[in-house]
Length: 296
Ligand code: BQF
Image 1 (cartoon, rainbow, N blue to C red):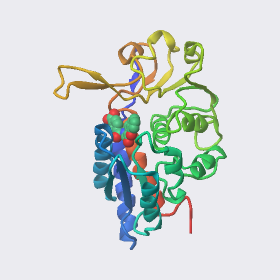
Image 2 (image 1 turned 90 degrees about the vertical axis):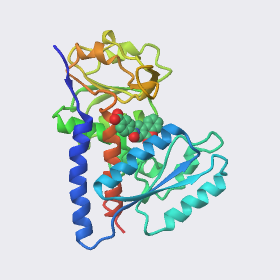
Image 3 (image 1 turned 30 degrees about the vertical axis):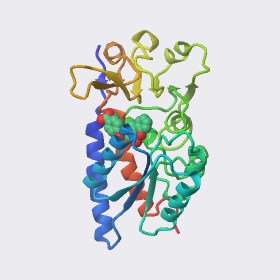
């Protein structure tokens, strides 16, 4: 048996067409076009590439956007005063601070300084807390995108054993919360593995749904998964490849070729979860403009 491939690029494209229509209807009804402000600290090339993908998506769906660049020497005080000016600017609906930040800056402090009503990444403690208690919120884009894939492909989560590998604030933790909670789909029995887990295979082999966000190429091999499992690979790793003009290729955290023979569904890298993350950012920005989560 060979797995069915979850085509995140296709699903993201369809979602963006829907969002574009929603944006046009919002503007036709007499509202200002939604505006996303992106803040980049420093010049990390991967961050620049991700911001490029987000800017292109904004253009596709009709959301206005621009990026403010600050030097990697910026102080916490200066950065927070810039964010404060964005918070107070009524022309800005969504604010995104591209991560990671230089090490002298605390991402906790910076994220907390964003107005939670403009936190389209869903990283502010207000939004994370509301997620945990099943209230309407800006959901972290990657887990939200994975749930859109479950919906699109009619992959049930209710009553399943879901295992999340990786406990980051951005992916693993909100994913485990969304899987375990009652709302939307969810309703799974959820295990979360992290760097202190003694034997991850004990857990991964028991998973009906396996979500891997560890940032380690080839971490998950065929012998570590259950026959017929659903595998969601969130990893995006650069590995050297001389045959590519860039000198590298992108791979996930899973041995895709090995797993494909054994599981029922699997996401590729690239073209799996990544495009969904960006599409959900567009959705959150429209929700912010419409004040759908936090009415005035
Ligand atoms: C694809 C990200 C790690 C650290 C910071 C499409 C993206 C990626 C892959 C993308 C990511 C990962 C983003 C693909 C945004 C996802 O075709 O497979 C899009 O742009 N992402 C980010 O902003 O910061 C990160 C991963």
